[in-house]
Length: 408
Image (cartoon, rainbow, N blue to C red):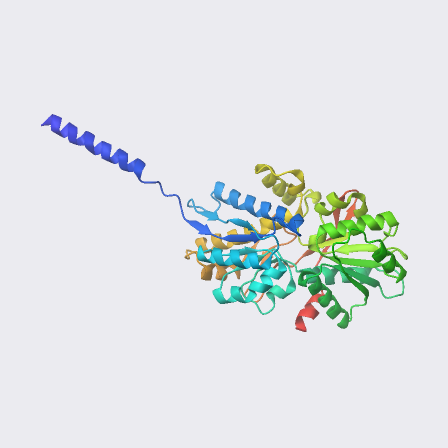
């Protein structure tokens, strides 16, 4: 009898042992997101580090159990090469896969899908900061100040710091797309509201590798300031040509020379890497905290980059920081829903994003949204390139952009 009991007990232990290893331990839930970016193609100088920033943050979230309970985020990052039709195809495939939030990229792609976002009611976090994306839209959550805020804010900076009795003479150097034209149009509206600058010429850049004729023409017309709204590569070419021609202003607004200014994607350490000393004196508006500031936020960005083996160029890029912020916004929405005891679905994430208020180490100010506010970080920093790095001059919020928005 004893032997039978012992045998039964041993068999029982074997069964328990088998089931213990056959059944996987609870590994938490997985929340699906999708990201479409121009990792290669005409704007890859921005898209490539952006993708790395988002990828690294999601890795960090999963490895550190940031969400708790072993929950993880699955966010495939796909390369749309800045092609709207490819972005649309990716978006539809992501929807079929049941994503909760879409992290998108280009102005054109976002505009093409704007109505789709509203129809399927999915929160969207774009890499494009085009003002038009949040006009008559509910589901697009802009991470930071828009390009229009940058451009209008730079125009305000010009009027406040211009020396002389004449109205500042300004040219715009823009991308040949809605991405470039939108901020120009809003600056023109700000002028109609009373801002004292005159736009002398608008240059939509192409693929020209030499800007000599254009720069000489601007100087001959009395232009003193050039506001750039494009990406780093064409700006770097223009600055290099200006340096070669000797037409770059040594002081702000120097008569007979050109002072260059630019919005978000036109500056940063990426620009200095491309143009070197030709960037000296370049004024730049951006809502990101730069690693050149050497503060606690900068240290955290560099620590994340080091953790995942990123090279120095990517680690110091504000575009890397922009990718981190987009991923953080999505992550915080999920965490908020979990903490509130709500099911993590599109509807509840949308509700949570409208209550969001958190500090990011990569941003110039807190990230806040509401039922009526769709811009996360309103604060902009004005930076100037000096001695091979960008240094902060001031932080501000554009006043004229509020007048422009009120007139819509």
